[in-house]
Figure 1 (cartoon, rainbow, N blue to C red):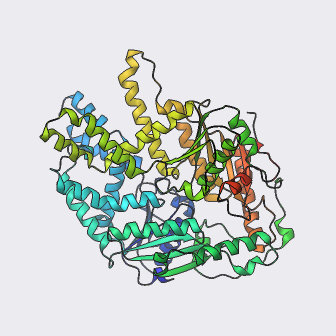
Figure 2: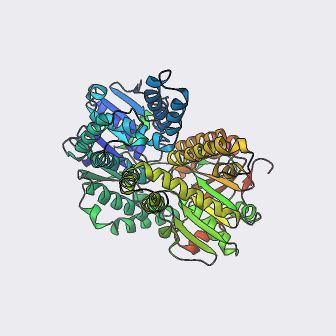
Figure 3: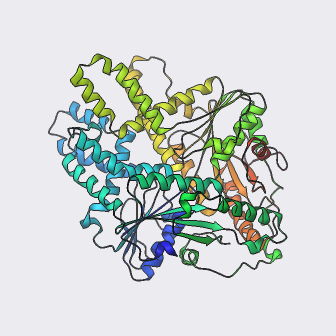
Length: 598
């Protein structure tokens, strides 16, 4: 593998959700450790599944992987990092300053901004703190999906510049956070990221137009901030030998070949590797050790792959959409791991509702979401938007300057402008944009394609923090109020659809997401199992083997996790454009499955 030749100290794997970043990062870490290197594998994804891949619990501490000598792992947990951050700041003044002042500091540090800064501090410490990492030859970063990784890698420069330009009085860093230390650490992180002798960025994609376009955008954005040492890995390439006498396999091969021919020019100049699609699930040490090597073609006995559970031929989303449409309006949120097809299914649900003459606003909270590329057209009754972090932040800054700034003198306005240049401003602006969009659901359908799991939970954390603040301020007055969190918790107003693939890791992560939502008082309404091979007609040995592996996961969703669910087969034609999106809600037997009474 080209990306693996003479690897530097820091290796970053990034790309669109679901392309296989975690699997390749884990396999790379194992291979380096097997070769005698001391390796630290770090996940910066708030919904990390590194522990699931190895079958151990890792968490927010450096943990040895028992099965692999010389390999340790760390999952940066934003919530745990934020609590430790608050303890470091508040602890020294508790019992020293008046309790009212201490409570004010705690409230100041209770929002999503502090969560991001705390996790970010841990990330930069790994790049710069020799005491923390001196025992390791290589540090491999399995990053969050693209949009949030770009933000994370831009933050060292953003914070460094903010502190240099201002007076170092950034309130969201906390009053006792040691800003000079932060300034030094962030500058060192910028230098480490930009040094090709230290850092290599591996863009992971699939042989699909959407993931290759996103990889090209990522390449350009990160090159601007100095990350020029980039490699490209195209993962899960379907073997052409499998396409004979299987229409679905043939369609996949043609689709991938066309995507490779149309690959953006900026990616063509990068050193590139291809990894073939494997028949097995990439969970466990044995599977990881086979990922980066060529293995013999699959030989499957059709009799051995007989279904273990009864699966109707290609059920559709129609029954779910019927139930959604009956309410006349409301918020429909599609959540799940990156790469499971949330954008496509959100667009399909929105298009089907609009086709029925119902007013629909389709939007995305994913920084890397591109609904226009999925829709490729317009439809009566359907409006489309995107919560663009840059745009909503600029709008928020202008709004604050026009309101608060109008009452300030020149010096006060200058201080306000400086505070609004803080990268934390983006978190506030995105939350406010999210709140505005979901309020529309009282008059129409709002269908939201959310960011991948971890960052959706951070947005919900901000929603919860705002709710608690409103309750503190207005609860005692007995005034009527409705917060965004109250709307999300009301099943009459909000339906959450958890999207998964019939694979081990996506189902485990979906189950964890459901547990997190329930802790927040939000009950998921339905599960959608997307792109199922078990629900499609396949004869290719590779596809049959993968279909066979789906059966236990589908059964787990049916029997353990979902109150209602729909099964969506993998289709021959990529569901892009209004007509093909409508096929997703009309294909097959036109029904969904319910495991419990509604």
